[in-house]
Image 1 (cartoon, one colour):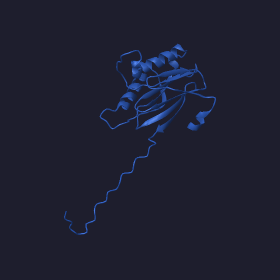
Image 2 (spheres, helix red, strand yellow):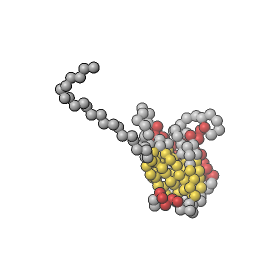
Image 3 (cartoon, one colour):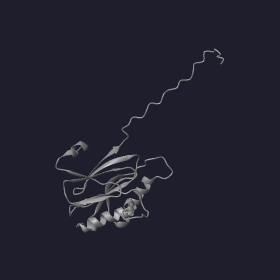
Image 4 (cartoon, helix red, strand yellow):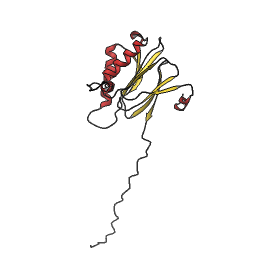
Length: 181
């Protein structure tokens, strides 16, 4: 299926933004997000037919205010798991897919790698198997996830603006003449 096929009138696309999560048992729902160094966990219980997605910015930290913690992985992972369990999922049947964690800039700290490492360790510690996904690499990606079936599609997000051409400066031709000024 191509990304253009997502325009099916039957499907309901919901965007999951930074610091958000969403769960559903509606087979017509497609969860989507755009990731750079952020990570999204797609989690589902295939027997209960319920699943969801989160989107976090940093592995760990403390936040001030009611929703500040949502941008951190530890909080985002717990929210999604707990909401899935409250909706009828069973911990022993959960399966995850992880996406994102791209290296977005050549800087000293690779936030994407830290996010990816955190997500893998968190799920390993929780005993939740990772059955697919795409972590790390360079650049961003657009993700579509069907929580009931577990199907996921991603596409690289690239710069659509063409770089400005760099003018070619040719060295002056030496004619042997001397110019005084």
